[in-house]
Image 1 (cartoon, rainbow, N blue to C red):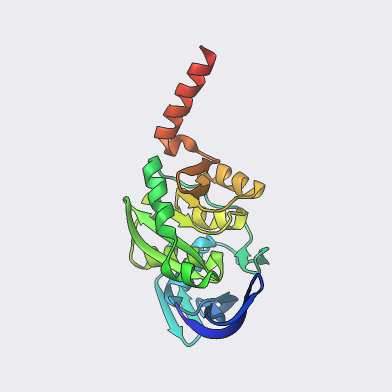
Image 2: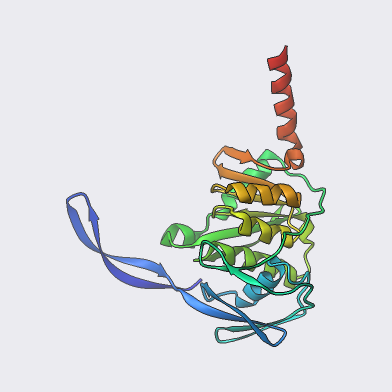
Length: 253
């Protein structure tokens, strides 16, 4: 992703010195759907085809995308739209389409080690170098297929989902990993894309957990090192459920 070098004055205690920092580039990207203006996103200006395709799928407007054309900062998407388009602003400043999240239909499971593998893959070199981006990863059939970084956490999800959509991957067999917190809008993106498991390094919100529960999505938060917390649909992590039942039985006896 695109970065620029900027000069700053760093203060550490009583020490002051000049530094050259890598800064993430911020831009505005206009999306057009089937020839009509859709919305403008504040985003990192890379992987714009994936961003456009993923936005349409993650907002539940379409399950597939026929084509994406990028001209400058304009992204033109052609897709079979399934619902009326009404947008609202999110707390992060991004936009989402009004409506209920789709129900997730998937029988995949994941192990504790699988969750930790997703978590370790989230952190990218640009994430460590700039401190100014969010990252998302997509695992399909247990393997990492793509990683995306962007100044907006919503955009990172759109980019990895768009990557999978444009390549015809079965999203119902995928696991999404994110650096950002999981409010309802973020959870709804994964559900609309048909992704059954979301792993985040950060927290969720009460509405995020409610959305995951209603959509049939397994939401895992605070995944860092050896720890993680499963908030909804733990049946997709049978190893953990088994250990919990053993713990309960010991307490009873």
